[in-house]
Image (cartoon, rainbow, N blue to C red; front, top):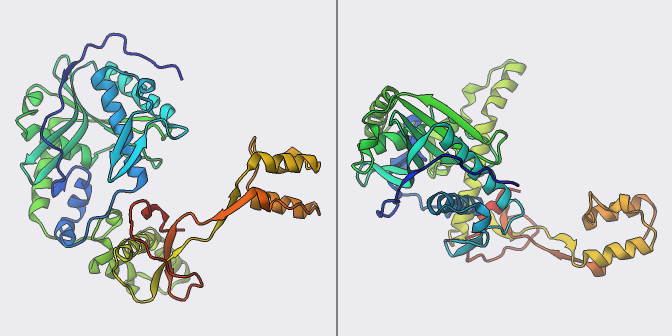
Amino acid sequence: MKLKLKLKLKLKLKRKNEMPTLHLPYGTSTASRTLACPGWLEKSEAVPPRPAGEAAMVGSMHHLVQEVCQRDGKTPEQCLGMNYAEAGLVFSFGGRDDDLEISERAYNATNELLDELDIDEVMYEMFVELVPGVAGGTIDVLGLSADRKTLLDLDYKFGRVKVPVEESAQHSMGLISAAADEQTIDLFSNVERVIYAVIQPYAKGAVFTWETTPDYLDKFHTRFKAAMKSRVISPGPHCKWCPAEPYCDAKRAIVLATNLLGTDALKNLQAGMDLLPELESLVSSLKEEAYLQMCRGVPLKGWKIVAKRAITKWADEEAAAALLKSKRIAARDVVNPAKLRTPKQVAATLKKKGRSIDLSEFTVSASSGTTLAAEDDDRDAVLVSDVQGHLADIVE
């Protein structure tokens, strides 16, 4: 992919603040949850923390690549091989097939947006606090235009599900924190318009923006301060990712309330389907928490940890392909699009054609990890002592 380089931009880069990034009780990433259910934080105090999943760590690696590129004047290609370490795991940039493509897309989109808004002063990975030690967070890119009238809050997202930017509570929380922090308060003196931006290279379009005013931030600040003082529990779609969800009585009561289902068949079905996303969220959260706690040695009656069903894979794909070719099996029947299909798919094709070819010496069967299962499952329970890397394997 050919990179689009900045043509005219001369950035006044401010170094990342030296204060270590903290996980404050009221943060930018949980701002929308705090507004919707102020009591979530108190409810979560006794809940053990969950380790980050691999996808989140890979996203953090991409964040680091973007910071290095903008701060040090590098391109993503020059960052290939750079390592990111977290929780004892090391991720190498370029280790996944689409690493460079995704990073270049984010890099180009960033430069184009900075040029478009005539951003002249930029801070990267800026940790700001609304209330020291209590509320605040990190802004990926905070920029001010040359005329000091346009303020940009840019956030990178490396997931595949599109993240909305309109009235984003995460952006709002970050900006009211920046407006209160002595490191960044001077940026706001002449601002007339505020731009929220999400750069999400996996989403169609990649760049999403929303424009507002300092007055909107003032009103958001008032709302957020009120939420910080409240302890109201209000379950809803925002419960997803809340650490207290598996333990929340209010959530279970709302989701399972029988009076939500009417007597009319169609209304009954509609009511049930309206609840489905929250039911799925609750079930997934319960299974994830149960798996995590059982991996830590907490027994749960009726459940156990088992090895996943073994999956047969090619041990020597080239040799298997050569044997099939020697047996006059057409490539179009076993190759998709330019790679040999899975052993299971090839076996089904051979059976359909009435052919019997032993490919067992070219395959290997192995479990891909562990998972949660009911006690009456026929698989033997296994002992798991290392939680890292298993959370993505919970829901099959």
